[in-house]
Structures are given as structure tokens and as C-alpha cells.
Length: 194
Image (tube, rainbow, N blue to C red; front, side, top):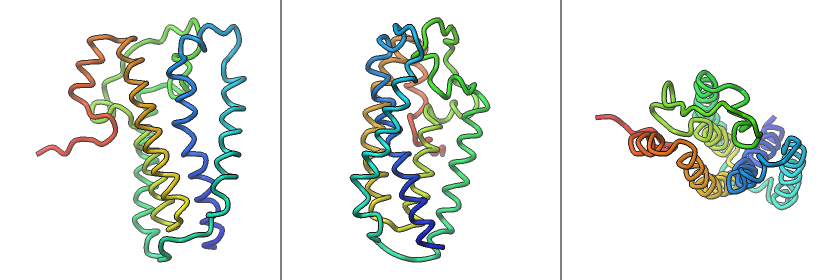
């Protein structure tokens, strides 16, 4: 059972680690993608799947290397999995699936342009990214695989770059309203209130 879970964890981390890279294809070129007559996902989704294959090929030689092996690590991993699922659910309650899929960013004629600052987004600006991080950390903690921890670190670095670009785009779209929101609500890690 553990070899199966480690394989699933490696594959999950491969996919999750490419999410920021996928959005890095979109945010710096949002105007370009909006100018296309057809859906940009016809190009972007195959590119994302290619990223999975490349990342899997790069990391495959190390998919069995362990930092540690302890069945008890699945207890905190379970808490992280549950946290990720709860964050996804809370993020979806205020966003439509179209918004979660990034359609307003890349499809022209998409008029749904409102800044959501309620619900979970009153506490953290990017709850979906926090959910992704929880899921990757869950697989990393549970499996103890070096490759999962490495992919999580890679996703954090590329995710930080992607959020910076997304912040610029949101500032352009929403102006002062977004600047005020950004100044009071943290990006990924909610503030601990005293």
C-alpha cells in the first residue's frame, strides 16, 4: 500500500507543481489571450499536460528516495488534506467555476469583473493557492519523498512569482479598490489575530 501511495503522491505533486507555471503562461499575456478569436485553452491545456510529462520525466529517477519513513506522518497529512479540501470548498462558495478556471482573465467579452472580498477571501486573497499548498504538503509529509518536498518548494517559488504577476493584473483591473484590499488581507497565509 505505501508504494502505491508514494506513486500517487509523486504524480499529484507533479501536477500541482505545474499549476503556477501554467498561470505564468496566462498572467503576463492576458491581453494577448483575450485577443484570440478562439478559446486559449485549446493551446494552454495541451501545454500544461506537456509540463506534467516534462516534470514527471525530470523527477522520475528520484521518485523512490525518502527523507524518512514513518506511518504516523499520515495523521498530520490527513489534517492537511482536509484543510485543502475545506479551502477549495470555501473558495468555490464565493467564486463560480468559470472564475476558478480563469475565464475572465483570458476570454474576451467576459464581463464578470467584480472583486470578491467576502467569505474566505476576507481572510486570505488566494485561498485556492493555499489549498494547493496544503495538498502538496500533505503528500510531502505523508510520503516522506524527497521528490514531493522538492516539487512543493518549486511550486512555492513559481507560485510567488505568479502571484506577483496576478497582483499587477488585478491592480490594473480594479485599481484603488484592489490596492486597499491587498493592504489589509494577506496573500496566502492568514494573519493570526491577537
